[in-house]
Image (cartoon, rainbow over all chains, first blue to last red; front, side):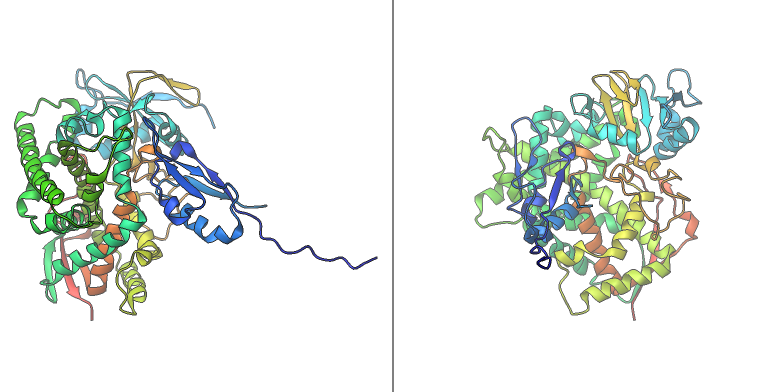
Length: 82
Length: 441
């Protein structure tokens, strides 16, 4: 039996959860992580965030965490792997 | 959880209901209503049925409800003569939402970086002639300081340079017209309302002049006024001159007494808790030890000062009631609140629930806060949360970073004589609010 080879280390993606009912469309997230969040204005409705990628790669983790932390309405959260 | 039960607050009088007691002190009345009735407390403000809803689950239900079901426009109709027709609750809700977005567009991190420096600069200028020691009424002092910092950040240096005592006095006349009495009868207090209308007319002249100057000049201005000049509705229409005036009065009004009172309370609590004040002063010193400018990044992360401010806003939230007219029957855990009644959420009561905040009346900056966005609501919540919340925190943090590096403070009068007062709808300290300051050695 060949010795077990550990799988190559791959950081898990960051899984983002958005609570759209609370989103006021400040777009702080868009400034912190422009490749992940986009805020769109809607005629008659509240501007609100769209995810450009729901599971951005780990290299964007710091940007995403800043977006989560500084969201004025606390709309964003991260689903950590258990 | 047991089903909620709706109870009626005792002490209603024929005709006026609970209005007199509410008028005397809305904060304490709300607290009594909750202590007596629990999470669903009905009271009568002279003909209108109001239902106070208390607890994170109830706040969440209110903050998640759509505007078409729980509407703020009617309970806050008394703001329309202050901000103007066509602005905020004087506009259809679809327009108002876009106006709020125009405000948040001027409060992005990119612009806030500049605001942080401006606030620090204003504090430096203000304290330049304070000398080594002295005594001041800090209710007045912070009113002036916040007015200067806000006008400079939001309206630009040319507006700030023209700022005179008149501007603050005009805002005072506006504020005096937003009293609990105006909730009941916006047309009944003739003298107060005449002063309000005159103040608004004069403010409109002052602001229009600055808008026209700005339009005719060149250059990029990284501030809110510039944002408003460039803003368009989703149909492409720009803001009219009158709308810009209204937007300016709205944001200045919303951010003036709220932030100045929070600053006053913060200073009083720092003086009451010198051990915490000392630790915060050391934290601030550490951050700026290298002679660094007061930077946005630094202001975002000052844990001790921040926790202290959170505790100030827990115990002394500037707004004690948030009201919504029920336009479609509203269901809260099986209990229906019918259309036509008004639901009320109270940050003042929310922050005094002993199971979430043990010994709630005790000021304790080391306390842990519940991890629930609906348990701690100094700025409200949901899509109608205070649009300036991040700016307000930045402003107050910048003010105290500058002050605490230079001075230490102590109360002049007995500690328990600095009490809550509510001559208008904003919870503030009793006057005078005297403190002594001494330069740090």
